[in-house]
Image 1 (cartoon, rainbow, N blue to C red):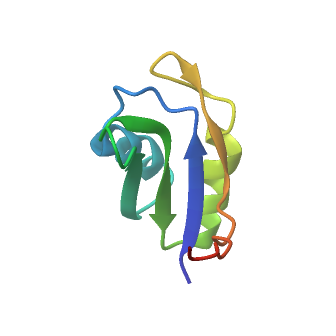
Image 2 (cartoon, rainbow, N blue to C red):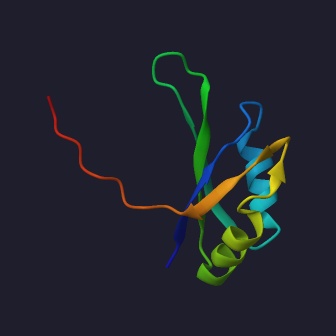
Length: 88
């Protein structure tokens, strides 16, 4: 089973390849998705990494949470399921 990881406080200059490289040090990465603003298309400073190995994912969370990455301290934890939002 794969584990989805929230990665926050990313610098706007970070690319998906940069984030993938940081997490691949701990194990195989399935996907990396950095979130952009819908209206402007600019990065929002957070994203999600999916790792197929739960043990490697937990190691990555423990090692990277609070670690400096391109001048900013990352916020890394297990992603929570998305809460349903009401449709207007």
